[in-house]
Length: 73
Image 1 (cartoon, rainbow, N blue to C red):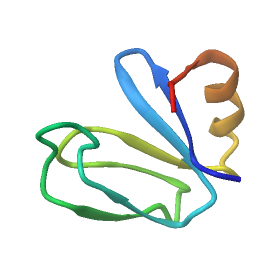
Image 2 (image 1 turned 90 degrees about the vertical axis):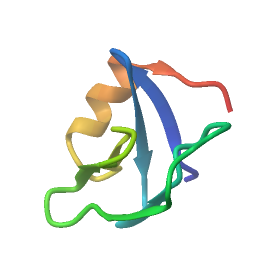
Image 3 (image 1 turned 90 degrees about the horizontal axis):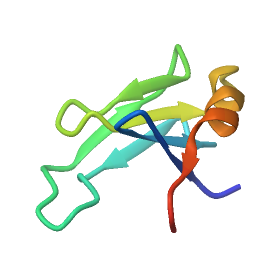
């Protein structure tokens, strides 16, 4: 499964199978690269842009899929 990105409220939320992720802001200007570990809770947020990463095994992932708006690839 590839990463899935959703818009929940005004924030990007990425559902991933990885326990360690990389965030660079994903935009034109971006931000410094941050490496983020999702363990032990199965979720974490980028300290620069606030993008939230949720492991697919986290029960919150299903709620995000139901309630979030799928972002264009």
